[in-house]
Structure formats: structure tokens, C-alpha cells
Image 1 (cartoon, one colour):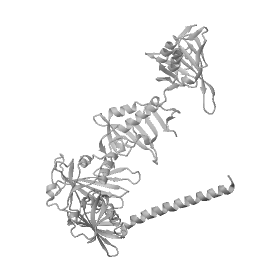
Image 2 (cartoon, helix red, strand yellow; image 1 turned 90 degrees about the vertical axis):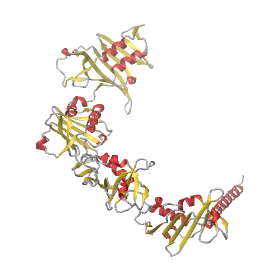
Image 3 (tube, one colour; image 1 turned 120 degrees about the horizontal axis):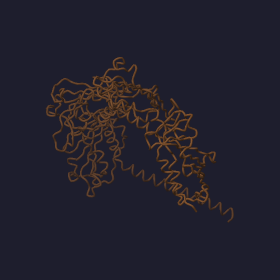
Length: 608
């Protein structure tokens, strides 16, 4: 093909693309113009200053816009849902005539327009007023008949009708409180009608429980009638419920508030949102209607309407003045802990989390921590719930020189928090304890005694001799005065010593390795290696095990683990034996099951 032919073909292709693009744009513009031509009104939604919505058989609702704020003028004292009013304004501005049905109708009753099912009137910023009537469905039930003033009858979509046909329930703000995105900073609960015994007494003195969010740490703190850290989950549950609850079944002109238990309400809740005025909600009787679904009558202060809200509030209200008081000695999540210091008796231990969030013992020695033991301690601290509330007095409760101290570092906190255990209660059944949040409570003696049972031993990693059986290439072993040597060749274990023997099955060698791999100790007999090991049988051990293990990673090769020596049974417990391992200074006690496993595996050695 010549260069001229190629250029000609490229030019033709470009022209075709240009023509196709122009045709597509033209078609799009034509469709858009056709749709624009269907618009009944030419105003912008922002031009709407007022709206009036009249529905068949219902009282009219009218609202007015001031900047971005909508106010309901009819009926009075009803807060507006600005989003719904804006949607009506936007929908009305974009109403389209999908098809003209009758240019000059003489009788519009056949279209459901005399009277109309829906009548929407909008006042515009230029002084004009537009009116739209909507009536019955067309035979296909996809559109509604509509009319502007005395003009022709045309069809609007059912979706358009739905967006415009909004009752007062939709148009009003149904939120119990207006909190904004920042939320609520303070709550005050008032029980107006409960005696000390819990019986309802209308007109009884108000009992206030108040909680406020501390700006420094973000925690809810009680300010009345007690001062202390609040139970975060309980307060948050009430705050979330009141913030997002919706009302229904509004009675805008109640004749007698006593009919709803609101003449003297049973309870009241005042919330203080950030940057807004306080708002109060009153709670009355449970609703009597069979379809109420667990609801109660509610009223907002300063507004006459009575409405229904979920009776869930009753379960969230404080039953006693101290109900919201934090009673756990550690309220913060255990996952937030980065370090623990434990001081009591002979125990003085510090544990820290590393960058991989694994616990390590850093005092009095450095060692890997037993993750299970640390988790158990943290679970205990988080789950212990105290009883009662007391003002902190170091001298009275013995906190100046505590019998037990737990110091906790929390992620993101500037300084650690402390739990101090002081003296026992007069009857000896409890200890006085400071909470990590700063309060003082009493805790059952057995719960504190269980904490004091923890020692350095509990927190140390109990794995004593560790390797992966699949990485082992060679084993040298002394067992009950016999010498053994095993070598892995071409994926199979061979017996080098004793000569003339083989493994009956390869799984027997697997049993041998798994019996010793990841061996754990049960106790530390001596923190320093005794000079004379004969009393423990480790000088001439029952088992001495050494293995060559393949390594991978940046420096692949062979490393030697061991020797791991197991001697005589421990005195008084035949299920434990004394043991040492190369590189560790202690004398340990390990389970007898290690010897039993080696014994069982050795039976798999048979003569050729």
C-alpha cells in the first residue's frame, strides 16, 4: 500500500470520527433541548422564598425561607425539616409536562383537579407566584394529571407527585434535639416523679444526674450529684438515642397534657450541644395504642406538640443517682495499653508492648512475655467491677503506701494512670481500690487476691526449647545411656547410630521431634545454675538432645539448637523433671510428657 493511500485512509477515518462525534453531540443537545422544553416553570429553586402545600382532606402547611433556613408559619411552633422543603422547591422548579392532555378543559373534575389532590403554591424572590395543582393518576398509573392556574391539563410523573406530596409529618423536623455534627457536650437528667423507693409520685422533687464531656481526655464525667468518671457506654447509649431518635404520631394541639403524663412529666432530659442553646425533652406516660410498638409520649420544651418516641429511653435512664458512675477499676480498653507496671509483695515487674504489639518483660529481667498470661491479667483488670463510691483520702484508705500498685501506660495519654489497693473494709470482705479514672470504690477480696497471685513467673514466656520440626536436618541424642544419631537424606530420616537400625515408619521420627519442639517449662527451680547438678540428675541426664536446623531469610544456613538436658523427676511431683538448656542460666522443671514422647518414638527403631 502506497503512502498516499495510507494518508487518504487516515484522513477518511478522522473525518468519520469527527462526523460521529458531531452527530452524537448534536443528538445529546437535541435531547437536552427537548427535555428543557418540557419544563413548566423557568425559575431557579433558589428563587423560592415561600411554599404552601395543601393536600386533600388535610390542613395546609406553609413555610418561608430566610437564607438557608426554613420556618414553618402554618401551623405555628413547628420546627421545619429544611431538607424536605428544599427538595419540594427543587422539584417544583423542574416540573415537566410529559404530555398535554387537554388545552382548554371545561371540566377538570374528571382529572381529579376539582378539587385537586395536591395544591402547591410558591412565592418567588421577584414577586411572582406560581401555582401547581395535581390530581388523579392516568390510566397507565405512571403519571398524574396536573394544571398550572387555568391552563391546560398535562401529565407529570408519579415520582414528581411523590416529591411534592409531603404531609406535615415530612415537612416538620422530627429530631428530638438539634445537635449538629459536633454532637452533645453535656446532659442533665431530671426525674420529676419518682420517690426514693422508685414508686411514681407526680410532683415529687426533681432528682438531677448530670454528665459533661471532659475536653482534655474526651471522657464523660459526672458533675451532679456525684463527681467522678461516668460509665462511658451507658452515657453514650443515652446520648446516641436522644441525638438520633425521631418522633411520630404528633398531636399539635393537645387539650390536656395530663392525658399524656406531661402535665408533671415523669422525667426530663436537657442536652447541651456544642455551639447551640440547651434543649429539653419531657417524657410522659407509655402510649396506650395497640400499635405503638413500645413507645411513650414526649414533648419538647417551648413547643406545644405531643408526640411518640421509643420507650427505649426508659431502659437508658439512670435508676439511681450513682447509676452512671463508672464502677470498673479499669474503664479504658485493654487494647489501648502500651505498658504495665505491677508492684506488690516480692513482685516488681514492668511489661511493654513492642512495635509489633507483642508483650515483653523489661524489668527485673528482659524476656519474651507469655501473651496468654498478660491477656488474662488485662481481662481481669477490665472486668473487675467495684461497689460504692468514696471520696479519695490517701490517709484513710491506705493509698499513700498501697499494698498493691498497678501503673498503666495508655496509647496517646501524656502520663500513666494508676490503680492502688489500700486497706480492707471493716468486715474484711473487700479492699478499697482507686480506679484508673481517679475514683475510689471497693472490690471483693478474692478478686484482688487473684491479682496478687501474679508473679514474674506468670508473665515470662514458658517456651524453653524451640524449633520447627520441618526445619531439622540432623539430630544427636543421648537417651537412657544410649547414643542416637539421625540424618535427613532426600526427604527421609535415616539412622546413623545405632548402626544396623532403621525407622519402622517415618512418623515415629515425627513423634520424636514434636515431643521436644516448643518444650515449655512449668516452674523455675533455681534462677541461677547450681554449681552441683548431681542432685538434679542433669549432670548425667536421662535425655540430652541437640539438633541442626536449617535457617532461611537473609542468611540461610544451618544453626545448632541445644543441648537440651532433662534429668531426674522433681521431688514430690513425678510428673515434672529438672532440665537445663544451653544459653539459659536457670534450672527448670519440665513436664514428664517430653520423656514419655521420646520413649514412645524410640520404639519405632527396628533392626534392618
